[in-house]
Image (cartoon, rainbow, N blue to C red; front, side):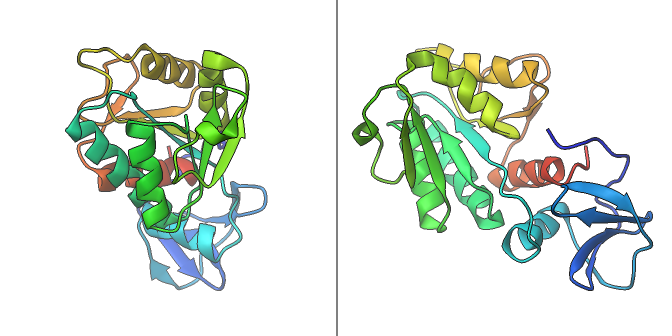
Length: 218
């Protein structure tokens, strides 16, 4: 998890080949933390714009974000999975998911459409079970225990469905693991309710909140 800081995205500035904060900080891309420094004149940026620059030009670490959801997903959850994955891929963030069908396939498709990297952590010992859009299929052979692996590997998790029947206990377990580990856990409109969940209504809102976490802004 990125180190905490009292910086906010109000005052982010891109200039002189670095990301600055008007409050007197410079983002060290290698260490992934803010250091005291006086900000030079530059171009104001939102958290999403700053994260995109770091990931694509500024040498930022490519920390993965998990997209989680059920195999038996509603049309709304499938649409949310694809849209969120596409928005995060546009930032340059690598993604991780369960690698198979349903919401995971929709997320993989959204990532692939934007040229993103989707890592699929499969429960079985056969990487061929991955859907066709997974960039890096990893056969874990550990069954449902891979849910904990997904939550641990990600800096943030976005849940896209699983609230309604049939309830997705796998999605709920991944959310719970993430919350216990102190990860940012975002719930799209059809995600289950858990204490500590951050609700987002759109893919763009979710991407902005993930960008803030990536930049250690909250």
